[in-house]
Image (cartoon, helix red, strand yellow):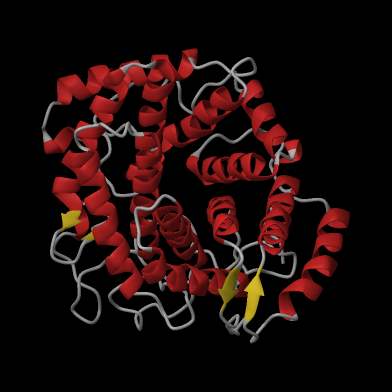
Length: 382
């Protein structure tokens, strides 16, 4: 069942094609090729493109999808994946959402997620995009950061999700403009948030300050799967654009490795992470968005020699098998926890653009690891 607008004819065709591919592999180990992974993520991309709303959306929900589509274009050269994002950028004149909103201490880092699409398209096709509105917005934030200083009550990025949404935009903008102010400000904010939310014992992030002293039903700390995925994937994406000689780069690498090791240890036997990482039983339903973000980040770490291939390749292979099990009959990623701020039960039929975007991002990294041995695709209760 589809919950978002789409072309019935296109979706019907995709359902037929996907059903033959998806369920013939269930329960069987196999060798996964680059072409097979490409087919799997292209199918999801086509479903999501067919369901894009008529009015351009530039919030984080769709922003993650745009990042995935751009990654897929880079990997395949297929312009049909880039064109929808290019058209959206043109329609909003390369502005972020809420561009005119007055800045204050609660300004949302989520609105900068679309900035990653803007900087990426500018890097690919500078003649078709402009950085001027994005720079103006980021310059406003630089002034705010300077005014706020180290005051924890005035953090702009005060929840862990924001470490995926905003920092990469600042780091990439700095690389494109050769202006160190953006990456320096990003770096300062990153470690202020980390100081507040990172549990050095668990090597995981609390979602925000409200969870610092809360516990799950089993007495363990509450660490949200998608929240950890946002941070791990965000760290990978920041590392992508940080200069090799950036003084704080080793700190990001250390953080990434610590989190990767911890998160890998919490993977379910079926390759899937549950919503509450330290209490699987409280919310036992499989969850795809956190799993996709983890798969992306861990595969990226292997491909960029930040993580040990021998240690982490089995983890990402199991994660990919789990993700394939969570696709719906059209080949798009389901079992998605809806937008929220904490662990919760998941409905198997739910799909969301941000989860599909993370799935596509993960698939692009998995293509680089192929061919690889894929464990049996788990059979999940629908």
